[in-house]
Image 1 (tube, rainbow, N blue to C red):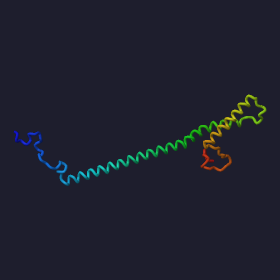
Image 2 (image 1 turned 135 degrees about the vertical axis):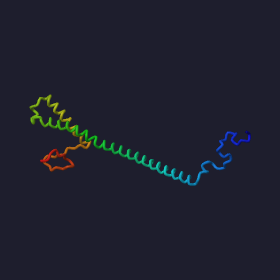
Image 3 (image 1 turned 30 degrees about the horizontal axis):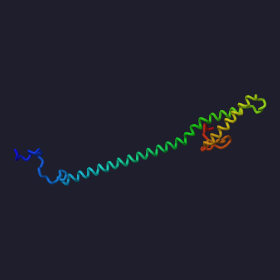
Image 4 (image 1 turned 120 degrees about the vertical axis):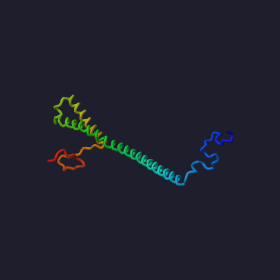
Length: 151
């Protein structure tokens, strides 16, 4: 039994004195095929990487555009809602009698407060870029006016 070459635990099908590693014992055609597969896999991974980087850049760009758009149009939505308040204050002030002497002094103080509120509201709107556009009697300009109906 001592003369058995596999007695030391080495497998019987493995050569005992092989000078080359197992990978180098492969045929040149197998090595070329393996190289081609690795190159294809490398190209595929490179493509996936570039696509992932491009997607990340697109997401960042879209998010920045959304932020800018929200800043730009956020004030527009707010202004539309506040304009109805400004219009109602203006109508209330227009409904006052022309002769202030006929108004009770206590009511006159309320009127002065409403006028101050209207002036402050107009100043705030103008500070945020909302300005009055005179449209009555002027030709239609699509940049400034909105068409409600056509006559």
